[in-house]
Image 1 (cartoon, rainbow, N blue to C red):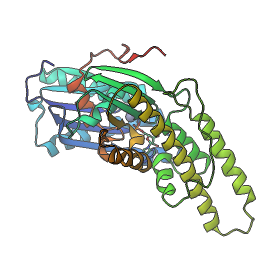
Image 2 (cartoon, helix red, strand yellow):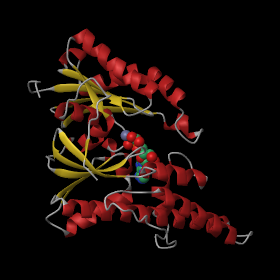
Image 3 (cartoon, rainbow, N blue to C red):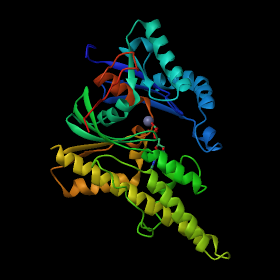
Image 4 (cartoon, rainbow, N blue to C red):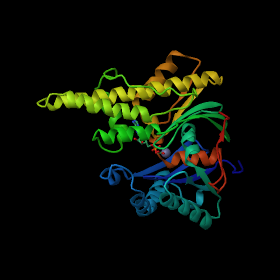
Length: 343
Ligand code: KG4
Ligand code: ZN
């Protein structure tokens, strides 16, 4: 990349429901990473309302920018470049970060770097870590579930992906239909601590391709089993019995998801001759996933595991800065950024 070190990048992320601004040095050292979450706003609707999200980004972008500068002890003129997520995401939301970044670039005369949101999730593993390619990345978020072979900082291949729901989407939908609050991922994750993961036998999708995923059938099976188990509860059951059933369902769902992700990822790494595995995306905050992969890495000394810090799992601007540093794409999000392995 052309920037002369030390390269200080101010990045903006506003692709969905988090307004975030970060300042990162050399793609790894986080000086600030301020996240203004809209979760409470959208929780009452049970999901993200795009129009409301865009308006909220407009309301909070300047304060978030100022907080990031203050925390880092920097001024706009210290920056070597500005970066923002250009897609994929909600267009009204994306426009807020992208136009702010482009404006800052114009007024300071420093370059603007456009970032692909999925690249950014992969790059979250470079933050405050020594990770270098090659590695296999399991990307699990609200919109994507992919296995990505990262051959080099700027060369990535998708070798597996979901055929229907993304993992985070499945978590959110299952939680919603179980009348649990949004976002469902963290709620089900927490509930599963007190449940029995073997209480319900749920199906794992059998697919033609070993690295592809499908969570739609699991979602339906979970809801059917939950409804049936609820009907079998005697009408005068104490509320504790209902809570225990919900926890067992959450634990069984999570167990099936975790085992599916784990088995496919480890197989994919082995068959590609890769010994470094990274996990990224909002769902990488999941305690079951982190524990399962960590236990495996601990008992297989040849395997190196990288998992982002919690603050870098869900949407944040620090990962956008890392991505801008390591794989500065162009300003044109219309290009196909990943190559796809012939499958
Ligand atoms: O990466 P992200 O912040 O946004 C997208 O790019 O989609 O991911 C959000 C997703 C949501 O579906 C949320 O329910 C899920 O990540 N999530 C979790 C957990 N924390 C967030 N899913 C399972 N367990 C968690 N602890
Ligand atoms: Zn994301």
